[in-house]
Every structure is written in structure tokens, then in C-alpha cells.
Length: 65
Image 1 (cartoon, rainbow, N blue to C red):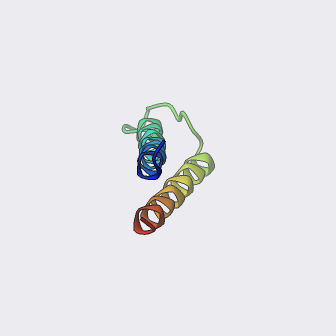
Image 2: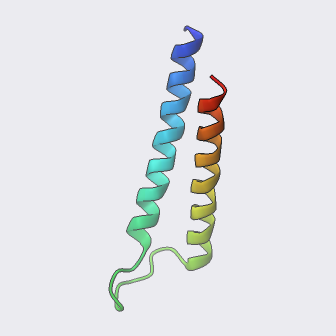
């Protein structure tokens, strides 16, 4: 596999992982007062930190090409 193909696949996987985490976080946030809490706030904060870390990795990975 060529280097640029492998980099593209890695970039796509990391991007998909970030999107999946963002979707999970958005789905877990209660909209109305009586909506159930799916993920407790400390874990939501952990998900948010993971999303921020992935954005950082993606930015640096993309700039290193």
C-alpha cells in the first residue's frame, strides 16, 4: 500500500472516530428537563476531552503531510 493511501486511511479512521464520539455525546445530552441521563456528566466531560484530543491529533497529522 502506498504511503499516501495509508495516511488517507488513517486520517479517515481518526475522523470517523471523532464523529462517532461527537454523535454519542450529542445523543447523551438531555434536551428536556425530564429526559433521562444516559451518560453521567463526568463521563460526558471525558468524551469531550477525547474529542478535543482527536481534533488535535488530526490537525497535527494533517499538517505533517
